Amino acid sequence: MVLGLLVSVTALAQDAHYTTRQFGNRAWLLGGAFVGNPNDISAVYYNPGALALLGAPELELTGSVYEYTRVHVKDGQGQGRGLSDSNVDVMPSLIAGSLRFKFLGKSRLAYSLLTRQGFDYSLQTRGTRMGTDLAGVRGLDSLSSDVRLDQSVSEYWTGLSWAFPVTEHLGLGLTPFVATRHHELRFQTLAQGSGEAGQQLLATLGRDLELDHIRVLLKVGASYQHGPWAVGLTLTTPSLAIWGRGSAGLERAVQSQGFDTNAPAPVFNYQEDLPAHFRNSWGAALGASRSFGSTTVYASLEGYARVSTVTLLDTEPIVPRGSTETLNGDYAFALKPVLNGALGVEQPLGDRLRVYLSGHTDFSALDQTPGTNALLGGWDLYHVASGVHFLLGRSRFTLGANLAWGSNQTDRFSDSLQQLGLSAPMRTQDVRYFQATMLVGASFSFKDTRTPGGEAGVETTPTAESP
Image 1 (spheres, helix red, strand yellow):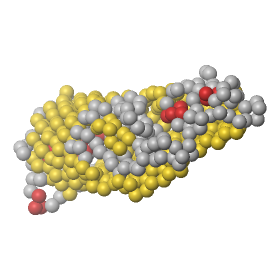
Image 2 (cartoon, helix red, strand yellow):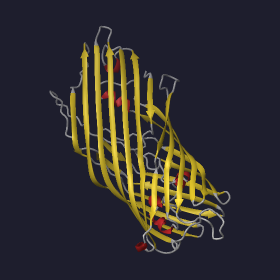
Image 3 (cartoon, one colour):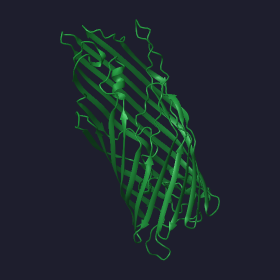
Image 4 (cartoon, one colour):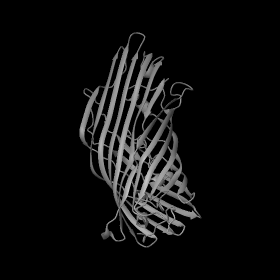
């Protein structure tokens, strides 16, 4: 029986999810249901076509996102004794602003920098077992194992958006993004055992991957806004690689005295300055919003196509000395098609305050690969968000929270032991995920948001002719 699973998490891996994060203050509160009419500078991401219908130039800072993550492992400390750990992190989300030049005419330009992914975590399992012929080794009656898995990913998108109002109610736009990604993944396994006749066993395994990659992609969008209705459509292109380099290492050693383990041959291999690969797929989103009196309802659907298996690094095959075995020290990833939905409600309370409630799905796109999979986020997540958005002079501030939860099983620990020729006590372990995010954000408008009568009021939907 595994005695404990220790989890230290900054933000548990969301490497196979598309909608864990939102980009913009109101976008967090509305679950990203923004494709029809973002009505603020977050249009640079959700629908660049809507940027053409945005009246006032803005600067938006979604710079304080406080994220609490809790992971619970069922029976992590034995039957009926779960094990939990939690952590709090502060991370940036979006910085975006309008660019105004006289030569643009009715066209609009805007810039954006967003944190598309960012997490750093460690999973560790430690166990001691007593029994007979443990791990499939005859005579082994005591075995201790320590398996650790570390991963960190940071990905930033930088974009320059252009939009044009075709008519007073129809806007078209596009945002080219440059995406930079840094990815590290490490497995470390140590197993020690003994037998009643004094036999000894020591087995170690270490695998690591590190890569940096730069790619470009394009998001195009159209937004039609008239009366109480707004409808939008966006298309995200597959990425085009610009540059990528990385390294990979593999170490394996099994030493035994008195055991017939049929141990695999030792390996020490490190390869660097390797070509690195990464890509994203086609994506499409459809959204709409409608006002019912003072209440506005937002809804959107977003889908992504399959990403066939990609080998992250071009590693050379590894053949241990004195062995005919051939090892692959690389990692692969693949994404299956996925469709997510979001639904949000916006309700003004007076002239300066709005409240929000939303929910959205965040299904995992993790797909199986023939080789070692570099992605870990295999759990489907469900999000609920709420908060307030209020005016102070020409500036707008946001306070809110988002809750997310999901669960899945992992077999990564047993796989690590099997690479040493040892069988694991249990094939899979249950992991339950919970995350609470608190948002503190601000938007600064360079145009007075007062109503024509001079009274302060909430923002109205701007038109293409707005100054």
